[in-house]
Image (cartoon, rainbow, N blue to C red):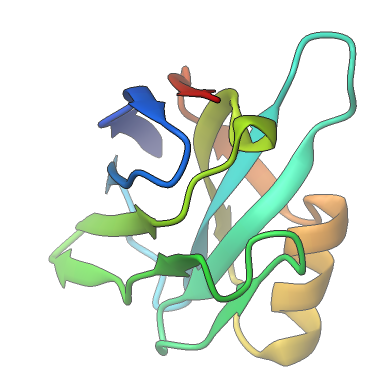
Length: 133
């Protein structure tokens, strides 16, 4: 059973930085993706960034150049990954979720995972990021 958990949310002023952490377990498949999604109450969920187990990554246009997803560090069936968030804006305020997709690898799959949550079957409980102006 895959389990995902995130941490590192908090409150910062605009222009500040935060680092989110994602830990996943039960990842026995050779290929998989981990990603970050965010959601504001009353709005649709948005893909932020995804990375596959081969090191390929993709960022949403809204965060490109400000956020950076790390490569995945894996130890047997456990994995960790980080999201560095810089130059934060009030519109980045949201609940941030780490998620996992099994059998995920390559550009097309990353794109589908980021924009449509394709293949994403495992979700963390979320961590709140609040950016004040």
